[in-house]
Image 1 (cartoon, rainbow, N blue to C red):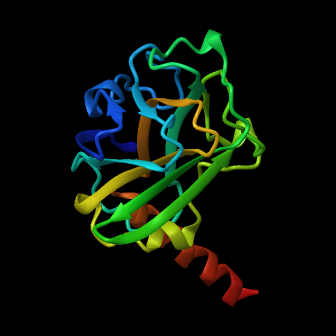
Image 2 (cartoon, rainbow, N blue to C red):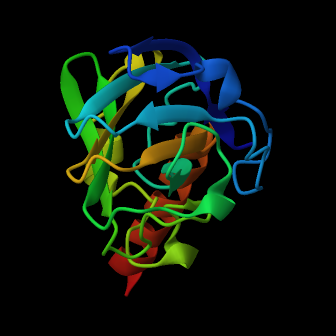
Image 3 (cartoon, rainbow, N blue to C red):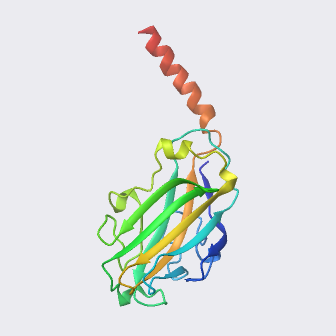
Length: 198
């Protein structure tokens, strides 16, 4: 069974409205959730703002590097109310999301107004279906995690033109079942035996 970890705590720099309870609102990490229930980052100061979200201790190390995904769902707009119909005003903004283990960066994803997917006035995921910015962790990124109980997600938002707010409606870390390694090893051994026989 797939394992999920969602935010269960918040620390921010004072430039954010709401907390982790506003982005743990669905059991379906690929669903839309409740996009009206969001964390709002204020980028109107023109400098980078930061919020950290600890992840619940709900993932047991699967001991494999495949099947890890970091979902985050986002939009931007011109006021402190997540009414994206008002539309974004800036073309110079950056959303950086990092999966942290203590002080160590395990994953970094950067999205801009010009990237694919882009930061727009509509909620979207950083998913493979949205474009080239993938939500799949590489095997190297996943294998770099040594303690799944010490993970948090750092969100950095900057609008150099000081016009827009970030709306963040979901953060989810997905990992394969903790028994994944138990099934992966026999398959690998069987493949090895078949290669030796040929």
